[in-house]
Image (cartoon, rainbow, N blue to C red):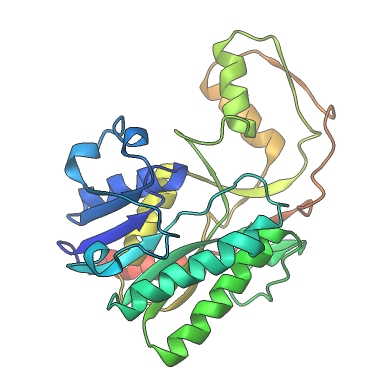
Length: 288
């Protein structure tokens, strides 16, 4: 399914910039949407993409021109992160996103991938599969879960393929500078002798951003797939182990000050994704 033109929103974000690179490598033509071209010019693949400077939530946006020649869309844009508790997620983002995606679908795009979140599962512990009941416990998770339900209802009235990719924990180039691993890398670079963190016993599901972007690109290469898929490793890893692995890789002797910070109230102590559905897609693509 290479060679087709794909519309990408959120192209300058953490996930978007890596997904665009993966898609271009696979022969896609990427039409990237950004609110500011200046923010995009430093991207290594800038010259390879078609760029549209626009606000996708603008009701006056010319959708017909935006999607001309486009057969699929990857919708990654979502303002306001990493504030997971803001009411704006369902007061502003949810209706605006639904309205935009509906316009795109009604204009003729038949395949839409949207990034969801593991926070849709809420405070449930243990292995979480796509068939697990969604019980979001923060406004961000609630808004994403609601958007999926809205779009599934839309697909009943106006058929299209909805690929809902639930992201777990991603790390790598371009990540939020306040995130754990970004803070750790900065401390190592600055020659700090100690690093403050939680006790680190939380079990999480981590993927390097390049791997996650590759998985998303593979899903997009399967237009026959409709439904939810976890973008995850399927392997629970403790936060402490992850940090210690990074210290070893960087050959750092930094001391960890464990227990300085408490555990997050919006996350269970131990949860990770079940990746059987993802592996089936990856395997099908490998065979093809």
